[in-house]
Each structure stands twice: as structure tokens, then as C-alpha cells.
Length: 252
Image 1 (tube, helix red, strand yellow):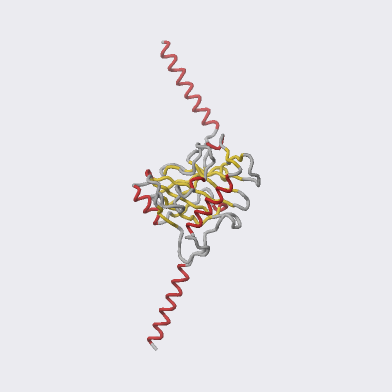
Image 2: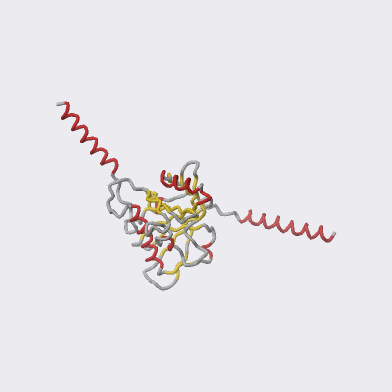
């Protein structure tokens, strides 16, 4: 009787472990509302690691924060800290042809556009990263929020040599990766069904940026606060006053 009880208990434990270990597949760009956001870090050797943030585009707002996985933290530590890695954040709704992208530049949207034809490249790059996170299985059986690191030259799972770095506008002012110590600015692009022409970038949700906070082991999202016109005018006036003072000193 005791042996049977122990056997049933063991089977129950296995069943419970199976349930707790299960993890739904990461939502792709064809899901309602679009894909979940994918965060990628690349070290100076070109090795990369990617993490699913578990949030779709609509859920990313100022004040949001996402815990960096132990794998990502180990990757950053092995690289020697955030100064030796770059990172990027992408997501998309391939059905609605709208995408979330990121850049180290806070101002590149003023004069950079992306070709309409890039949407197919962005869709394949995003799906490639998501497939790697899912380990090629549409319904993975284990927790797989993070995949990697993948060494440079290892093939498609790697962010750089796998072609995922092609998530860019074609204009060299824009790259999806920012230095780990810098802010990563978020932008959105809405494509049309045409493959001819150019599309403009727009500040995501009015202007958001991400930062890596190792003290709290988080990726943190904050709003971009525009400098008030009065402050800009005050700074300009102070600069002009300095020029006038220098000219007076020289003439004296």
C-alpha cells in the first residue's frame, strides 16, 4: 500500500513538473495585436543572445520594465559589462504591416525614410528571431524566454550573421543597435501594400526610450521629455550673451 502511494505521489510530481515547465509559444507577427517584443544583445565579437519580453506592442508604455533573464545577465557579464555590448528591440504586426523598431539616435526620424519593400525583410527577420526563441517548435514544451548565446559565424540564430541586422532602413544613419550604456529610442513604421516608395519613421507612442539597468536587472522604458521652448530660448540667450561678452572683452 505504501509502495503504491509512493508511486502515485511520484507520478503526481512528474505531472506537476510537466505543467509548471510548459510555456506557450512566443507570439509571432501574425498574431492578433502583433508579435511579442524581442530584445537582443550583441557583444564586441559579434556573438548574440535574444530574449522575449513577453509583451506585445500595445503593452509597452512609459514606466514599463522587464526583468533581464539570467542568460542575458551572464552574457553581459562575460562581455565585461554594458560598455561592451549593444542592444536592440523589435516587434511587429505583419498582418497590419506595422512595426516597432529602435535606434541609438534620438533625432534620425527627421530625415530618414525606409523603403516600402523592406517590410518583407523585417517580417522574415522578426519571424526568424521568434522561431529561434521557440527553438523551431510552434508549441515548445519548456521555458524558453531566452535563446543563446550564438557565436558569430554560427549561422541563422545569430543576430548579425543570421541576417537579423538587416532590420534597418538602408540609410546608414539608422541601425537597430545602441551601445549598452546608451538610451535606445523606440520608433514605429507603418507600411502599405505597395512595394514602391518610402515610409517615414515616427516616435513610438509619442516618444519612448529603453535603458539597461543592471542594478535592478531590468530593461526600463521611459518617456522622452521634450525640452520646453522657453528653456531652449534661455539657453540660446545665455550663449549669445557669452559671445557679446567675449566681443566686448576683445574690443576693450
